[in-house]
Amino acid sequence: MAIMKWPFRPPGICTKVAIGWFVIMTLGLGEFVWAKSKVVDKRVAIMKSKQRIKDAHIADSEKRKREHFGTA
Image (cartoon, one colour):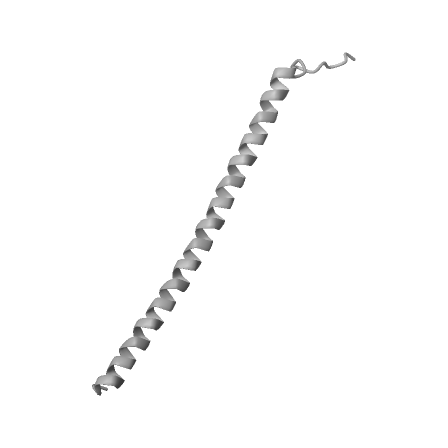
């Protein structure tokens, strides 16, 4: 019975470095996309709350105008 040898030679230092860079770059880009989506979500939430405040202020000022001028 013959001993089977590995069909490929073991990876060299350049291959190991390339694999390392690939893993680091992939994880880095994934982290960037995740962080950017979190920032966008937070910005949208802030914009929605500002819009609610603005709408409430407009409604309140219109109510005061109607009360002041007696056009209720």
